[in-house]
Length: 318
Image: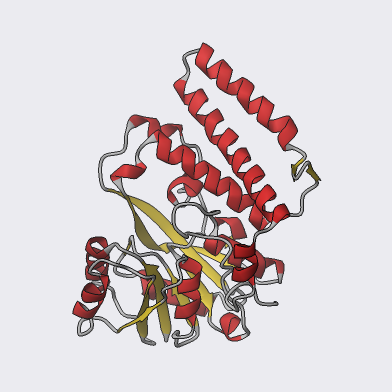
């Protein structure tokens, strides 16, 4: 038995299409269920979920506190079976997705975390400048096609296609509610933070190439402005996941070296009329900006963050 778990908020139309694709899934022999947590939607999400009650082994729940990880932690109380499979409300699974994840978990018994291929499903044809993006992971949460099946580093396990043995959550582990989607201003890295934490505690991750999913890339995500804003959120998440760095004036020391370097590369790109080099330098610069922003936030603290940390849904001791 396994449980698929994801959160949703105000994506009723897309959610309906995603759940239609779930109706085409090959069921694992041991059985499965799906838990969808509505994170305070104000559209027709509840009606969409109700419409699939007789077509899928679906259980829905509501979490009004805004934040993906609050919703996931609520959903963890409803999982059944020995494997919790995580994904998103904009992810379309291949028909054999669960069967292959189940097989990976059953054969790789010394591993606790499993992940698979994440391909793009473009709403509109991507512009040519998309090729300037070196790593599709931070931008569109896509896996590197050159990644080989086998053991995988924690930072290469992505939320749209991830499974974790349920006994980990039975021990009290929960998602950190200080990271991950929450409105429009947040540090990225919801699932990455959890996997890094687990791997630091001795758990291992396995990558399988036989259980692909498609991540829906919206047309508004195909602008350079959107990508560069995402760089800031990614930088914020990078620092929050690994905050143990030497600081100077409240920010990592290395930023005083690297920020001027990226500014110089941006200037060189403009002078040479190399828009690709300019864009790549701006991405790195914004990533560093994000790290500085989060370092300041964490060093100064806030009443809101203290409240979230002690809400009972943040980190649990390993």
